[in-house]
Amino acid sequence: MATNASSAQAPATAASQTSPLVMRIIGACALAHLINDLIQSVLPSIYPMLKANYGLSFTQVGLITLTFQVTASLLQPWIGFYTDRHPKPMLLPLGMVCTLVGIMMLSVVGSFPMILLASALIGVGSSTFHPETSRVARLASGGRYGLAQSTFQVGGNAGSAFGPLLAAAIIIPFGQGHVAWFGVVALFAIGVQYGISRWYREHLNLFKLKGGQKATHGLSKGRVTAALVVLALLVFGKYFYMASFTSYFTFYLIEKFDLSVASSQLHLFLFLGAVAAGTFFGGPIGDRIGRKAVIWFSILGVAPFTLLLPYVDLFWTTVLSVIIGFILASAFSAIVVFAQELVPGNVGMIAGVFFGLMFGFGGIGAALLGHLADIHGIEYVYKLCSYLPLFGVLTVLLPSTKRA
Image (cartoon, rainbow, N blue to C red; front, side, top):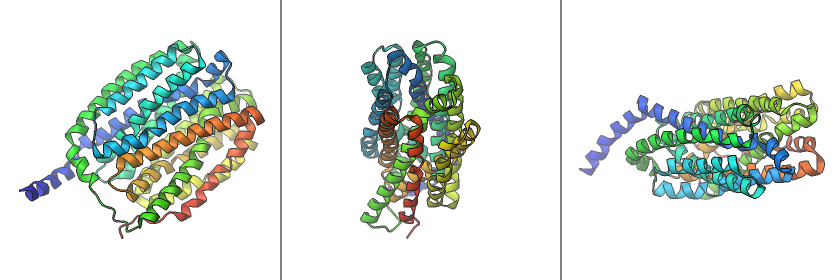
């Protein structure tokens, strides 16, 4: 009887993976990611205002980013590891509640320590959001894992791109108290996450079926571990460099080209928009030509442009920042899916590890680069970071994950 039930379940599983409802769930995950990262992007978007209002140094600005991104990174692998074995659909809306509390605190706090606390709460919400929602997107993928991961990820990139624009329109002209308007968006996101959690709860059997998959690549445990270390080093180079843009690109433009805060935010939007586009195309291309090829192109291929960026005028700075954002972003979906193929059955943990590494390396990078900017100037930071994409040469060490 159990065998018959299992065989009967297989066609239903296949059907559910290709139905419009599944694509709607992937879209809902992307929408939730858009809102989550839009809210999070408010924090770096108001750095110039916070720096002026509270007399912060670049080092303190870096510490704000470090606080947010460390709390966003340390919990993610543990949450993913636990929920791989004990799924908790209600963590989806509960994580967004934590983000709501953090963003409302940010609108009323009046001291540096309280800004750090608000940043930490937003980070905790993120650490719950990413591994769980990434797992739901993969669950609804119908086997097109690159497409599902990139669609989910591009929602976050779009949110990060629009966040600075909304901050420039709502917060910069009217003051810190208007951060509270983003709480309304968080309330909407709680509703979206609750809807996703209900679908997730109804499809836990499918999740367990996927979770039981065994590796087919034939690689030894040592080679898998070595490959994961290489992927982590690639994420290190990518997100240390990304930190120079997300936290300090506005300061760089203001200092080097004497732009206004609003104009610098527009340039940041163009960069983040290019990141969103690159993320979207990276996943499906990886499904077609292989994830290793995408990683090669994305990380090492961007090096000529990053090396040139610190020495050009405003026009070419804008052009190069868009090219860099597009190429560099195409790797992340490929890296995550590559890692999930190395360690099947640990979807949440791998998503948590790599989203965690993304936030962790970004936070450490922001703090370190802020300290270097205080000592040597902001332009020195961009000259130093221009060499980071050379880490892409490590891609040669990645094995094939095709069926042995």
